[in-house]
Image (cartoon, rainbow, N blue to C red; front, side, top):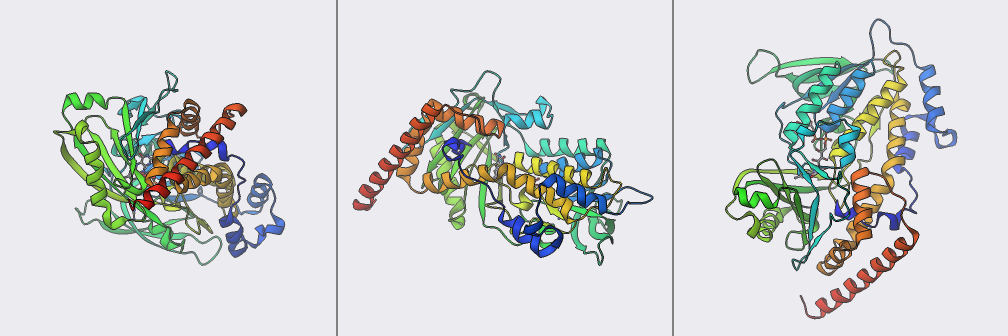
Length: 469
Ligand SMILES: Cc1cc2nc3c(=O)[nH]c(=O)nc-3n(C[C@H](O)[C@H](O)[C@H](O)COP(=O)(O)OP(=O)(O)OC[C@H]3O[C@@H](n4cnc5c(N)ncnc54)[C@H](O)[C@@H]3O)c2cc1C
């Protein structure tokens, strides 16, 4: 989160979508670069020519019932689509810090009682343990929400069911691809809803389109040869700490940076209802993850002393989008697509948002389930997504490369976080997921400060290298 700092400094970046261009020529000749028009024109021409569905509405399966799947299924069902949501584990407790931006609460109409904590204070802690408070510019109503995923995901799935989606407790196994443009996809899954006991029952389901929301190890992605992505491994311990210690974390979260906690990411202590989540992640040193976790715990030791580890969890975090995110009538969303931001490791909001955006494209393209859809309808989602979020991903990618590369750079980064203007830009861009217009004078000051910090960091790095540190 803290690394959305200086977003403003980089907003001149222009977006483009390499995936869109290459995939269009592969599988949708009608949308070759020579014939590309605005998304709206493109969508209307596609839906006009698509045949009507007769005797029923369009059938769409959403695989995976995390934030991406829950939000996709709700939007589809509300839009008149016959919707199936397949989730393998209804009480799934996704390994996750559970931090969500304020805008998600409003945009997704989340009830406040599913939010465990409202964090208004964030401490950024440097390699030499210099702590900077970075919540000072928050307005009274602003906060970072902390949720438990088992609570959030179940809530979103239930809401999809209330909207009309058929929720299946099942493990998706594979799909048979259609032989023609209008033939159905056949999904094979193990159904745990049925009365056959724990082993479940093998079943199949015919649908017209599929949304793959089945997370980082997506089987849907494999089914369409979507290609791999680089990933980080994130490790987290949930620690129940004494009540007096919990008081400290009531509305406060911590982020630790340094080679000891992660060579390329950060360590965190996030508060939950009655415990804290302590974790770290890395792309480059996956084999050392347990050592890095011990170091994170050590850094926070005074504040979590007497705590008892109640859960240990680990999971991959995608580093960038998959080479392919749409093929014919199958689209990937959330972690399955690879929508986690670098630097901050944030993916819940982007999962929910991409699920909803993809579903909206299907609802619109099918005219509320009355017409068939094709790849061009799903590409409307992809184009809108890339246009909206590509700059955010790029900025965080750059910040990670610049500021997480050495301890001196991290010291400079934490130093920069003390600046009120930096804090305001950080929180505004994190909480509201938009680039807020800044003050040109402050922007200039920020640019100088950034350069100054980097120069100092480089000088310090050279000194440390001389000393062989
Ligand atoms: C340790 C850790 C900490 C994190 N902290 C944060 C944080 O604080 N804030 C933040 O914004 N992001 C955080 N993230 C990232 C965030 O967890 C993900 O980006 C987010 O969960 C993606 O949501 P999703 O719906 O795409 O996928 P998931 O949440 O992974 O959901 C996928 C769902 O699909 C189901 N599924 C998978 N395979 C199948 C199958 N074959 N059949 C049926 N169902 C299937 C799974 O059971 C699961 O419910 C963290 C990640 C990790 C690993």
